[in-house]
Image (cartoon, rainbow, N blue to C red):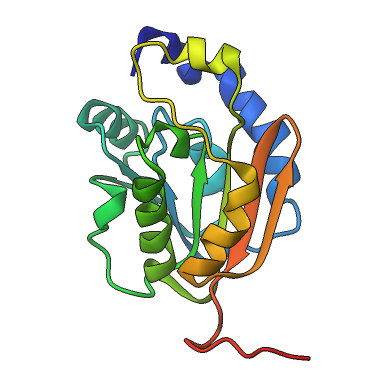
Length: 194
């Protein structure tokens, strides 16, 4: 990531994520006991999330960021793992919830984004919840990511993408960012009602 991302490590950014994103998105959602956070980076969402679950596993692809986060959360309910979210090393149905906040735009292709979302679906328990947010594409953010990967999600495609993977009860909200909540069905076969 380029040097502009240093702002993502500040207390101000964490406060913004806590107040403006997580608080409003997750205020009425039960995250269960065990949650997987994909791509925590410097951990802006991690502190808020860990207070709402018994066990939080954070998977981070960047070894330096993962190491700093692991030190920060030593002897807590947070387990930090260095790894690739497109190939999660967790068993099927391992978590009650999966969250990804302001990281999907760092994946270079929609195919890779979909693979991460498929892995989230795989590791969720039946009736598990996927929650997330990401930035909307705009010139300012394109410039902010100069020399870095910037592939914003197209909000109008997100419902179909999540349903194709197998999620149901999909909700996508677009404001100054895109937010989404989806549920893994309680059974492999979805039943249509008329």
